[in-house]
Amino acid sequence: MNQKPSNAFVAASWIALLAGMISFMIGLWNADMLLNEKGYYFTVLMFGLFAAISLQKSVRDQLEGIAVTQIYYGLCWFSTLLALVLLTVGLWNATLTLSEKGFYAMSFLLALFAAIAVQKNTRDLKRAESEGQ
Image 1 (spheres, rainbow, N blue to C red):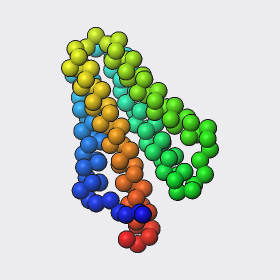
Image 2: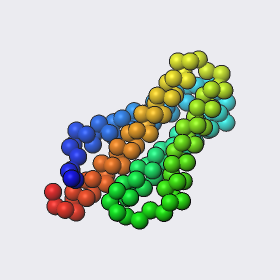
Image 3: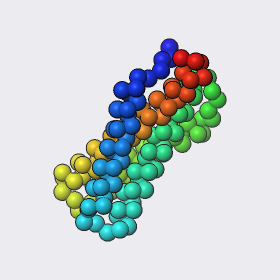
Image 4: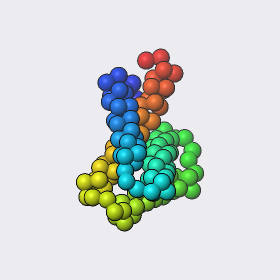
């Protein structure tokens, strides 16, 4: 069953993605850490977003019968988990307060979840458009 996502869900997904990403980046901008540390966390965010979107796409492709190589599928899972591990290790070893660590973790997870929802919505809207819904 394929349905076009509602405008409210599409908007909520984009708002959540922007809220997660922008919050994370504002936190980095205002953080009292070295530039290389800020670069590390920014890179982990971008890597995580890309990995999560790639994983969602490969899972969806498989469900729809589109060929996905097992190596790519495995790399998507590995990359997504690696991004989570890299953030966890970075925050574990950071000299930040627990509330700051929690802030970065939650905004990161919000951004990853929302990126998956935005990618799903984009794909569902494209399919609905091609089917004339």
